[in-house]
Image (cartoon, rainbow, N blue to C red):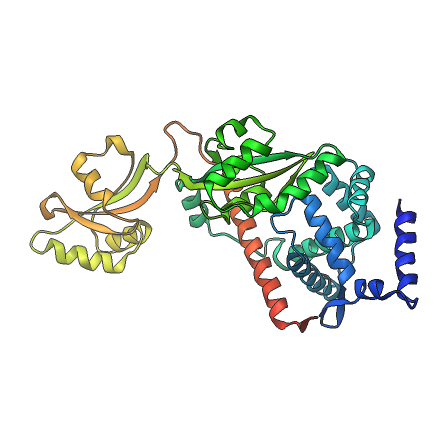
Length: 398
């Protein structure tokens, strides 16, 4: 297979050297220069086909070129740091990527070849990914990215983030035979251009191969977390009534029309409150509360301020149902670190934290929470590094 690909490439190069080789000359013309490194039109075409095979949300030539420019910068940074991808790493990377599709490397490469993607183009893609992963590890890994303990604890007790969900209409065109694949390809521009619900419903009843065709393609609410990431990303970018570009599925081509985008609420009801109560002196309790609040923005700091003044402080952590109703009402109005005067001016209360853990739930694994937060920070730092490399590079698109 690799020999066939090499022969095809050699033939194209030979054609470029002949008087009638203008098409090949255009094929290997520069599409961009990145600090002098050339990205060819051939590479853009190969990457575009690869994105289509992967079901990427944006398989356009512009997106393919953008990815290739980024990879030139990533590989240049890897060379600057002395990072070189070995043949063993490359084979492992190819195997790992093929495994995501539950295929062996040879079978996966064969599928790519059938779609017109060379093994060299796939290897370039994998090599760049491995090199950048090594760059990120060297620059930001190994304990270089830390998360403060209080940040970890707050994240562990934070409410679950609301999940996005979508209400959709669908059209699924079968493409399990060459004839059906050609028909799906012919219908794709017509379906993708639909701009209203009535026309989409009519097209679904006529062309779709799923039971939802009887309902004009209408399907129930779906959580984005339940969908493949590439589909979820496409759907988030749609406006109500808009139709997605064709999405390649195994033996089918899918189109989705967004009806509504909504949220599934997370666990946004606190189950436990931590708070501190300070006894205030008679005479001018509110003035004293203001002085203390100005000196302490957290409960930990409050303990130091009150202790230094010889005052009394009680710090409690209680299930929300066990907190007296009047105190609970005051705490409901506060953000962590804010204070209120209670009990007719006799006491001051500061909210320390809210916990959103379900009653009886196990203590969270703080090491896992810390790991997730570290990964988020590393990803942000890696994105910032790539943006910096782009800003400092000489990029010329033809």
